[in-house]
Each structure stands twice: as structure tokens, then as C-alpha cells.
Amino acid sequence: MAEPRKLSVRTMASFGIGEAAGAFMGTAWSVLLLFYYQQVVGVEAWLVGLAIGISVALDAVTDPLIGAWSDRIRTRWGRRHPMLLAAALPLAISFVLLFNPPRGMSDVEGFLWLTTFGVLVRASFTFYNIPHLALGAEMAHDYYQRSTLFAYSAFAYAMSVAVCYGLITGYYFPTVEGLYDPGFLNPHSYRTMSLTFAVVMVAAILLCVAGTRKEIPYLRDTQERGQMRFWTLFTEIWEVLKNASFRAVFFGLLLGSLVGGVESAFSPFMGVHFWGLRTEDLFYLAFVGLVSFPVAFVLIPVLTRLLDKRMSVMLPLASWITAVNVPICLRLADVPWFPENGSPWVLAIFIAASTVGALSAPIIGASANSMLADVADEHELDTGIRREGVLYSVRAFSQKATQAFGTVFGGILLSAIDFPTYATRGEVPAETIWNLGLIAGPATSIFSLLALGFYLRYRINHRRHAEIVAALEARREGPTGSGLARDAS
Image (tube, rainbow, N blue to C red):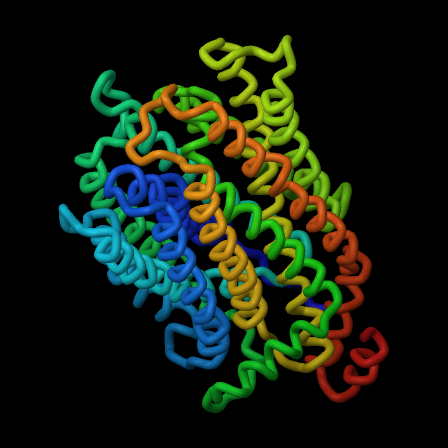
């Protein structure tokens, strides 16, 4: 069997830098968007949740279309790179407009503005993200090198999230006592924040394209040529859903996205109002990320070799569920010895729980992406066709669709618990705060536990993947290898 082509550190780092675009867009989206439109612009929470949900849901519909198209296009720059470049400017422009609506809008006008530019931001990012993920699966052929490549990707994403979060909490939105407490209420900071982040996103995309373009001649192309028909897409999706290991990852990520949708809606409210922290206190989470993410980067390939990829997802997920829920449940139960808001121990506990999440998230993300790359090999063995674009787009579709539902549901729940507009820290009713914690903690974690059950069903370990690769190599060597390929399947 031929030795797989090894990727250089420069190539893997360039691929990873591309994740900064998603990190800056996604962090601003999840941390600020619902809060900004509900608390600052003044749109009803359920309308904000609905607008964000529509944006993500419509974006989800485009995922399989973009993935299948990405699998088919042919240019001298390959299948993926032209789409990466085409997405840069639309993403930046729509992002700036999203966070700079006209003043004095009514609820309906705010809803329409948020929906329109939310859809454009998400669609532009998908036009970049799906080909970017598929590119990673194409560049790395080896079982362990895939884990290393996606570790670079997860590391760059996580570090970018830390930097982005630090800029949000420590630079753009400081607390102004008596005026903006929390600092997220300051309407003037959103303009400079959005312009800066737009520039970062474009730069990340350009660096990714420049650093990976030399791999274009070596990218594998076993996809049939021809025009894409809409109904053919559903056939391709059905094909990949027949794979048991893909279904395990698919439903595990789906449930995790549902939880993420609700938690992203509640995240800034939990830090400021449930735990009583200032914006400056939240800044410490950036340092948590800067310390935790390099550790996770080192742990990803180690865990993959020691535990295999399935347990590399399940162990961090179980740890994360525990770390999030224990302090919230202690506060909800009003345990006498648990520190009150304002105590330095509350910040310490919050940072400790966040550290577990900061370690777990990149490990789960990198391992899941690497698992899907292995599924692409198994699918090629079964069908003779590589479907990285479809695989990653179906994964993205499921995540976005459930995240959309979770965000809509989160907005509805904020309205249901009567969370006030332009709320100052420490002045929200205690009953509202208790309901906020119940939803963000134990209620949503039920779905995370169900995700663990699905990950248990993933079946491609190192031994199985070696069999798949050997069969594929035999098939590519000529007619004499086709029988071996069938035997291994």
C-alpha cells in the first residue's frame, strides 16, 4: 500500500487559520446577537429568537446544496478554493450591516432587518465553511493525520474564540457604572466591533486559501462529472444516511446543536444575571481559553491514539455536562454552603466550569470532524464515490436546523419567563433568574445525555479504518483489487 502524502505544518496551520472566520462570526452571533436586538434595539425576545431561527433554518437548507455543488465543480483551482474566495466579501459586508441597524425601528422592522442580514451572514459563511471542511477531509488521507489536521483546525478555532471573546468583554463592552451595566448595553460599541471582526474574517479566509492552494493537484477526485439535479441531492443524502457510523455522529451532533441553540440564547444572561458577574469578570474566560485550548490541542491526537475517536468525543462531553450542571443545580437548590453572588468564589467556580468546557469543546469538534472524514472513506468503499461535501453539509444542516429550533425556543422562553428589556444587573426578579438557570442547566442537558447514547453506536476504529484504506488502495491499483474491496466492505 502506498504511503499517504504527508501535509506540512504550514499547510495544516493555514487550514486551521481558516477557522478564525467562523470563530469571530459565530462568537459574535452567539454571545451578542439575541442580547443586542432584545436588550439594546428593543425588539421582543420571541421575535428576535424567531428571526435568528429563520436565518439559521434557511441557511441549513442551503448546506446540502452547497456541499453537493462543491463536490461537482471543476476549475484549475480545484473544487473547494474558488468557493472559499467567493464567500469572503459577502460575509464581511452582511456581518457589518447585521450589527448596524437603523435607529428607531419598530419591532416588525427590527425583525425584518435581523432576518434579512442574518440569512445573508449565515449563507455567506456556509458558502465558505462546507468547502473548507470538505477540503480538510480531502487533504489528509491517513487516520491519525486527519486527527492532527483537525486538531490544528480546532486549536485555531478555539484560540480565535478566546481572542474574540476577550475583545468583546475586555475591550469593546466594558461596564460603565450607572450607565451601561452590563457593558453589553452600550449601543455605540457594536459598530467598531463589527467592522474589526469583518476585516479579521476576510483576512482568515485569504490566508487559508493562500496556504493550502499548493495541495490542489494532490486532492483526490473520484466524484462523477455531470450536472447536479435537485432530486439527485436527496438520493445522495439518503446514501450517506444509510451508513450506521454516520448516523451515530449525525444524531449526536444534532442533539448537541439543540442544546447549543438554547444555551447560546441564554449565555450572556446567565453570566451577568444568574451569576451576577460584571462584563470585566467575563473577560477572564478569554484567558481560560488561551490556557485550555493549547492543552486540548495536545490532547486530541493523544486521546485518539489511547481511546479511539468515539471515546475522544464521549469522555469530554460527559465531563462538560457534569461541570455545567453541578454549580447550577447547587444554586437552584439554594444549598446553604454554596457562595452567594458577589463572592469571589462564584467567579472561581464559574471559571472552573468554563475551563472544562474550553477543554472539551475543541476535542469534541476535532474528533467528530475526523470521524466524518473516516466515514467518507467507508462510503467510498461502499459506493465508489467520495461525498465529503455531502457528508459535511448534511452534518451542518442537522446542526443548524436544530440550533435554529433551539434559538427560537430560547427566545420564546425568555418571553415566557418575562425577562425585562434593558435589564440592569441585580434588578431582575428572583423567580425569573431561577427559571433562567433551570432551562440553561438541567432541562437542556437531558438532550446532551441522549447524544452520548448515539455516539456509542459509532463503529469505525483504527483497525476498521486500516481495512477500509487497504481495500481502497487495492481498488485504485486496478481490476485485481476490486474483489478485495468488496471483501472488506
